[in-house]
Amino acid sequence: MKHQNITFGLLLWAVPFGLQAQENTESNTDTTVSRQIEIVKEYNPTIKEASKISTTPELKDNGTKKMNVSYSVWATPLIPGNDSVPALDYALTGHTNKEYRRTGFLKLGAGNHTSFLGETYLPLYQTKKDLVELYGIHNSSFGKVRLTNHLYSDLNEDFRTKAKINDNFIKASYTHNIDVKELSTYLDFGYRGFNYYGYDGRTPMERDSPPYDRDQSFTNFDAGIRFRSKTFIDKWNYDVQTNYQLFRTHDGLREHNIFTNLSGSMLVDNGQLNLSFNMFNIFTNLPDKTMPFNYAKAENTDNSTVLMLRPAYVIKGKHSELNIGVKTAFCIGQGRPASVMPDVLGNISIVRDYWFLYAGITGDYAINNYRNMSKVNRYVALDNRAEDTYTPIDVYVGSKINLFKYAMLDANIGYKIISNPYFFVSDNCDTTAGNANGSFYNLTYGKDEGLFSAGLGLTTGWKEFIQLNLKGKYNKWAMSKNETPWMMPKTEFTATVSSVPIEDLRIWVAYNFMGGRKALFKTRIGDQYAVQEHNMRNLNDLSLGATYKAMSCLNVFLNLNNILSNEYDFWYGNATQHFNLMGGVVINF
Image (cartoon, rainbow, N blue to C red; front, side, top):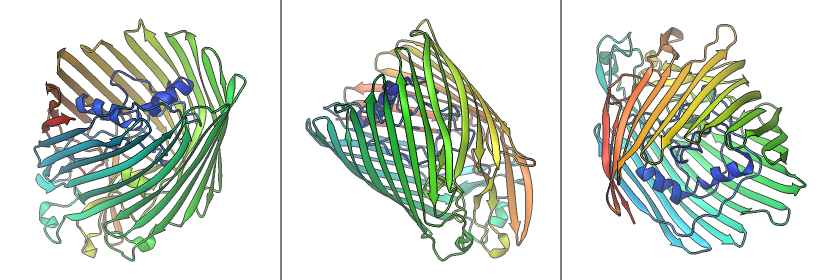
């Protein structure tokens, strides 16, 4: 989700142009700029990748990043992920000097369903060379969700169930500039508390004994350090960074991750040579428990190391750019021993400033550790770590047209082969074991599956007065016999309109659609399974909101989500709340 903070009018699905685009991406991780945009910006939904989400840990600038959005029940789900057509991502990390002067803010909000929001950014100390900053956010809901027969046809009667979300995050970072070099370090801590809730095939009467609610929590602790050159020094540019991440659950599962990145570039003639080396060390400690998860039978939990090497040569023309490279991944302990993927990406300007073509033949290797799985779906059963996902080939081609500089049209198609993609299957606990207190999600795997995607996007508007953003995608899986891409959508569409009708007032309307999903539901009774397939209801969500600048240092906001009160769920069994609202204030200082 690294493009979340880009200004609302931007819609570039896969069309960054060389290193300048990479620099723009990096600059948008700048805390002050992005946070100030978030304060006044409208709700802007993103569409989930139809295939397995690539969750390889990111080693980014140590400035505060926008957090990944959790599957909160109090707001329309902003679904994390990437477009099926990837961006051109060169080995060289682009760098942009941060603005010297920063401002802080405090954002407070509350809404129905006993929901609360708090967010703050504090530049504690700043000079031309040094910056100490602190960021924190709280997002919680302690209300109930109504489950109905309209959503789950097997449910005999409607009932309400508690759906608790309590997300907290705090991060402190220090950056020191040394001429054209930069040294930075950070510490952060996160706590995500929630309970397993939702429809698991039983009636309210059956839920009463034993108690249905079971609490869970994920704790994260991260520490990192980075040293880099912010521009080329003579003909060289380098970036060295490492971080340690601890992931711990309420049940006592602990996962230690150490990520190290070494990358560098050398200018040669009309291009540059790039080389990036990543090392991922993963150590897992499982608790000696069998409930609620049978950790004794956990798979893919051996200590492991993954080495990734990405050499590339970038040829730059006046109106074009070509990246010729290869990606490799080597696993020790578990995973594929060796994986090789092409990395050929390019773009060209056919008509300068008006018509661009882009294409690529690349691939990916995604590390599916517990930490990454919990970001995709917090309700996943933790006794089943997914195998790593290998994409040996990913081909895409697209065209971007600037329509008289008032509208931007982007059309693209892509096809990828994904080895070992995993999908979520709803699976309630074994009722005969006295453990019927929540529904979880187990995993089912594909083999070498194909995914065709076609996307179309349109962005248009007139200055600040009105802006329109449309984005749609069609996904077609080519699965092995008797396999189904559970809970993955066939069609996706978002539309967002924002306007500034008068000075100091911004209003927006957003629509989010997702259709064509199927779910597999399993109920365990002893060693027997009752298995059912369900056609999931389409996700239809209409939201609106407004932000008003009451004073130079005070903004007032109001968000109304799911105003049609439609019933839907993103993960089958975990219904979202119906209509909900949240209002509050933002204080700048």
